[in-house]
Length: 138
Image 1 (cartoon, rainbow, N blue to C red):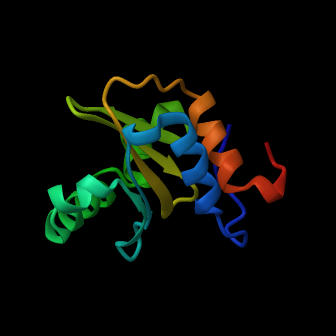
Image 2 (cartoon, rainbow, N blue to C red):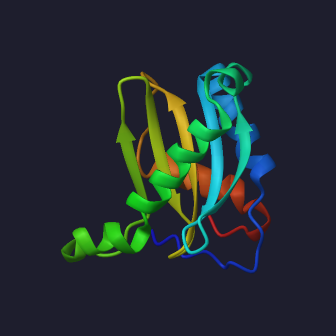
């Protein structure tokens, strides 16, 4: 499935957060949308205890590095023979990071506590369905 979404439609992050909280409860760490062209990002959810664990500076560094290193065009360039990239999943010792690409320059980063099962493409499809429920594109 290609995730080049009609960018004139605003994603519904409240729907996404509700779906993720229902599924992962306190294992949902944070959710942020990003624009890799401007390096701007918006935090849509951060688990309350992480607000004290991560300083604003640390959070900025994490998100800005993610935006810089995992830009959609770069990932596609690395794996050019495989076609368009829709998402990137990184499994860390303490968390799993899902980078969901909405366009060449925008996307969402979802961090979930390690140990939770994430099935691709079902998980990314569920996220897109929550983000764009009004569009009925799924």
